[in-house]
Structures are given as C-alpha cells and as structure tokens.
Figure 1: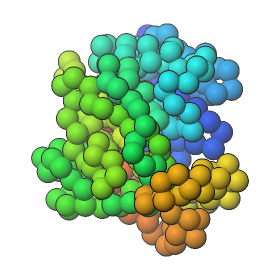
Figure 2: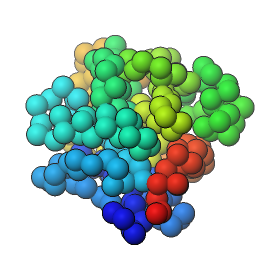
Figure 3: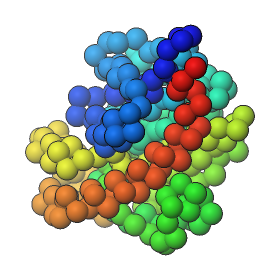
Amino acid sequence: MNGQRRPVAVLPHHDDVGPGFFADWLREHRIDCLLLRLDQGEPVPERPEDFAGICSLGGPMSVHDRLPWIAPELRLLRGAVAAGVPVIGHCLGGQLLACALGAEVGRNPVKEIGWGRVSVTRPDLAREWLGTSAAEFEMFQWHGDSFALPVRATNFLASRWCERQAFVVEHAGVAHIGMQFHCQATPAIVRRWCEDETWYDEVQAERAATGGPAVQDADAMREDLDARCAAMHALAARIYARWWRGAALRAGT
C-alpha cells in the first residue's frame, strides 16, 4: 500500500454485531475504515501490515467453533501483534485476541447479558485508557465465554461476575487491547438485540440454567438507553483515542 493511506480493518462476525460507535468514532476523526464481512465469506487478510490497525468485533459464536474464518483471523491477529499493528477486540474480538496470543478462552461461570457495573482494578491503566479516576462505571455486556490473560498482558477492569474485563498487552512499543464488553453498542444495536427472538431465547435459557444472576430482561436493557449509551460512549471514545495513538503513525505513508 505504498503511497496510500492505510485503513483500519474492521472484522464483523455476525449481521447483528456491527461496529456501531467505533465506526462513528472513526468517521468523526476522518480515519479510513475497511469493513471485511468475514461472516459473508470475505477472505481474512493475510498481511496485517496493510492496515493502520485491526478491530475485531463480537458475535454469538465461540473461538473454538469450527468456522472457516476463525483460524485465519487468529493468524492475522497474532501477526498483527508481531508486526506492531495495533489490535482492538470487542467481546468475541477480545477473546480472539487472547486466544491468538496463547491464552485460554472458556465458559464463564454465568453469562453477562445487559448493563453491568465494571470496577477498576488498575487505576493507572484506567486513567491512561479511560481518562477517569472513577472506581466503577457501567458497560453493556453480552457474553458467555471469558478469556484468561496472555503472557505479559495486564487486566485493568473487572465485574462481579467476570474478573477479566479488559486487558492491555504492549509489544514493540504498541499497545493492544481486548475487552469483554460491547462499548461499541449503540441504542439501535441494543434495541435490535432485545427484539430478536434468538437473543431473547438465550436470556431465558441462562435463567433456567443458572438463575440468571447477571442477565437483564429487555425492558431493563432499554431503560434510559440513550443516556446510558452516551455515558458508555464517552469512555469508549477515550479507549479508541488511546488505541489510535499506536495506529496513527501507520495510517499514512
């Protein structure tokens, strides 16, 4: 890509789990973006060096499912870290990044579905990535699996139900971040999930299996939705800005 601006590669894995606020943030900052629909058969890129950064999104599948794009994406993320191309992972994307770096990904004791409080475990990293000294705040969750920490990674957020919510690993002077929550979720995304019978059935199944201590019904997820998303996006914007520091120098030539 000599002589061209390198875009951020955005990797969706499911129709209903789009880039949401992350795409809005890229547009606001005039950052080029290339959406690669892996779930629709688009090939996984082989050269991470062609991109300023890579964003891996969520999805209802597991990193251990036998889907044709999973192994190639793991190679891409592993190669990106080795090449100093910043990676940011949302939910499944965070699990894929952890797995690509050799960490275990498995079932969380309970599923987290809906709005939940997330606590700071490393104030120094929280200030760096979130620009806040708050001890806790709210994020939108929808996951059944969770990640262990890769070698040399540091976790800095936790919830009552899942102790590893966001990890940072630095390699060759570039920071990569994997998150368990969906800070990119917009009101439209949350409403769509709440209206989908597949998502609703997952909530009901979790309640039958575990009592659902960390799941909400649709009404609770939609309560004060615009204000909650706005507060979450203010934090997400800081995460994205900190992540972009590692990608900005790669964006142009």
